[in-house]
Length: 199
Image (cartoon, rainbow, N blue to C red; front, side, top):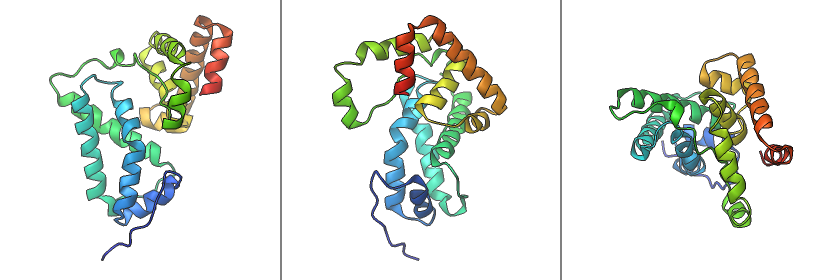
């Protein structure tokens, strides 16, 4: 059956794109890929500096999703579904790759991504701030860094983070509290408030 392709934009809701993608709409699939490709690569590089391995893992996920699109379930959060699928695939690849590295050494560049409109405005004023963000986040324990990244930079809810990391929601809250307490101790209060406003 030929699928009538719809027109989508960057403002189209994820859930609408997901519904169209599941019935074979290539435009919806392309828009979802465009929307999340860089974010997923950015997340993957927290675990390994091997960009090719990260990209190959993501390609495996995207191909799998397209081939099995008609058997996929609906999801309340496309972002969470993609993050979880990609994380699982990346970890599986890392376990079988002889050049894998320890995960706790890869959260040294946690920085928020900016849209193309924001880049022009931010680039002249935020370099030192972003460097400070990366420097201080790198001092946190590995699990705290990942939870901070998923909560603030990816916008996942604590329940989603708990499912992604296979821990209890209360554990996520505890980790977040400890991480924020550590940051508050090391940051000037004005810088800490600015971070919370930006995130």
